[in-house]
Length: 206
Ligand code: ADE
Image (cartoon, helix red, strand yellow):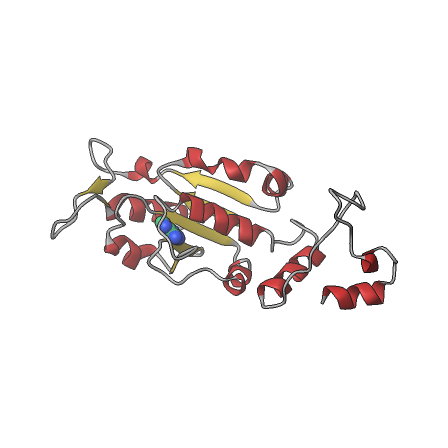
């Protein structure tokens, strides 16, 4: 599965260079590319933002570099194109599972006060928020989305872990976990987990 992340700040994506996501990339189970859409601006000063029509604080990302960039990396419109924005439906585990079925995702990270609506109208399929709070840009939301989707790509993590966690998200609470030592600061481990009766343990965990 391929992710193309359109961002003005590719250096922010260090979180995707470690642990499970790094291993998945090394094993070619997922591919992640960062595309700085500033490279597509036709502005002679390399600007990608401007003040909003109608006035108001802050700057708005202009449509041209974004649209040209998306069209350059997906000329046949094969990819699912997503814009990360707080003004959108909030991501759910069910949506993550659906998105994981796509071969190619393009994630557009906004910044400043927003993106010219024509960029969204011309080249975005879906807007996604990762929660009802406002971050300074779409980079952290894009990392969260890649991480959540990558878990569902075959072989990235054990199938059992994917299934277990999807249950817990859909209403069943995940049970508490314990590991060694058997006693820590005076606190023990529930006896049932120690007796090897797997039927009983399953009931306890449900
Ligand atoms: N950009 C800024 N805040 C965001 C959020 N909560 N979700 C997605 N993109 C965002």
